[in-house]
Image (cartoon, rainbow, N blue to C red; front, side, top):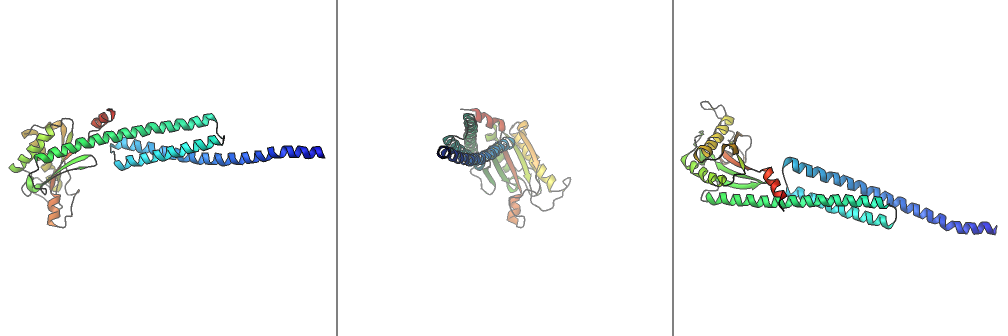
Length: 284
């Protein structure tokens, strides 16, 4: 009887230790699985966002900021999980190395995003300089007649139809030719960019001669401006495209005369060049 009691006393700590270790292991393993699922989901989301940036060529500051936040959170969670699980001795060295490799991979993505941010900053700086040059040559004009701005990495030059054309006409006025000459002077010094000329109208029905509607009028106005830039000022035609948007992209309400006047405009769009951007990305 005393031998049985002795055996029981000796065996009991081992049994209790085994129970405690098993429970601790299961709890830690569950925590590991939860963090690993979170890691995989966030990593997948990060990859999807990067793919979208590459496909669209739109490098939005808020998107990049969101990716940076995800990476920081991801690193913190996985570093903490690895440290906790190693302390509890519930993962193997191979598992710890796997987590470390994942963190290293995320570090590479983090570096890539920082490179994107740096290239974006340089591109924005170049665009800002171009806008300043444009405003410098046409700065004596009324802001209501001409406006230069940057929106999401694209430069827009809006010129009112009052300045460019007579009512219902697509013949460029002499005053407008002088303005286009100043714009052309700046554009000719940027041989690596392309641009589009868009015609816009208000929503009042239009029909005159061979022109059937506002679509026709907007296209003819765009091509008239393109011909001036090409034939009079020598811009390379392979860098220019013309389009008409009719009444379907207003910037103001057509319910008032002031709004309709704002909508009747010609827009020169300086297009972002993705190959030039990625050259910036490669620079160290």
